[in-house]
Length: 139
Image 1 (tube, one colour):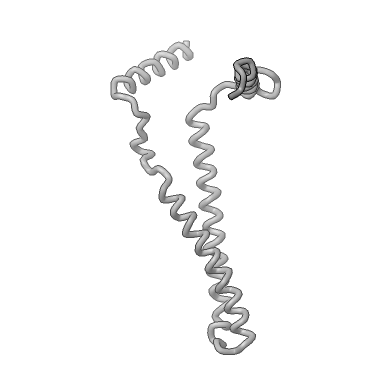
Image 2 (spheres, rainbow, N blue to C red):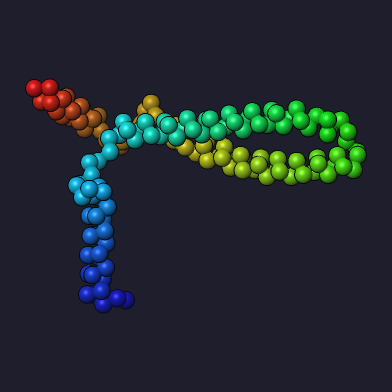
């Protein structure tokens, strides 16, 4: 066990580091990020993933056309070497893609009914407060 003074010093250092991380580069306190901007960032990331998957599908379609000749010449020793190399690569990539599918399937899909574990009353109060804040901002 660390002595009490060492634990207090390390705790103080941790608190100072947390306080510094809440400051922006110019030394001002950072404003909390809005949920809408966080959702927009997540949407942009999902679109990038979608673009990457489209690229993979186009590449696989092109590869399928390229290997038709190799499939037609199955049995030839040179062709078999090429087919084996392509098969090994596709097997590894298929495994990685399967893991990506499992990861995407485990992603929460309740966006329309996203629950913040609050009661209906709290939700109503939050709406009232937000409406009042907007009204005051307009004045």
